[in-house]
Image (cartoon, rainbow, N blue to C red; front, side, top):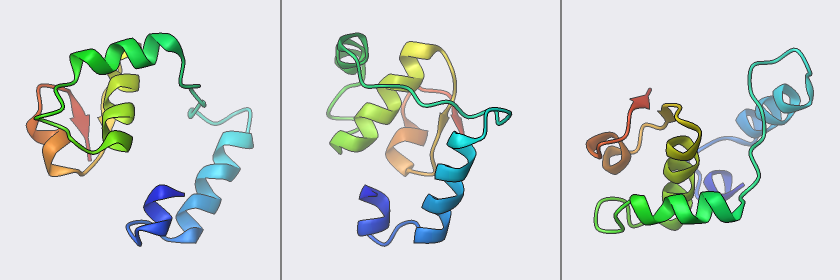
Length: 84
């Protein structure tokens, strides 16, 4: 919703994501923000990725050892593996 409210994603994209998350056969899975994810944020330098939602996304991907799906220039310029 953060990206929808900032007009970075359309409501339709959010609806598609929500539908995919409710489909048990889809590859996407929800990941709750846990204490371990918060700890992983310590490995994502604020100077590199200052926006809190972007840091949460980056830390979550780093914690699970998967690429970050983002077209954000700061995330892509970081040492994290990105897709997009």
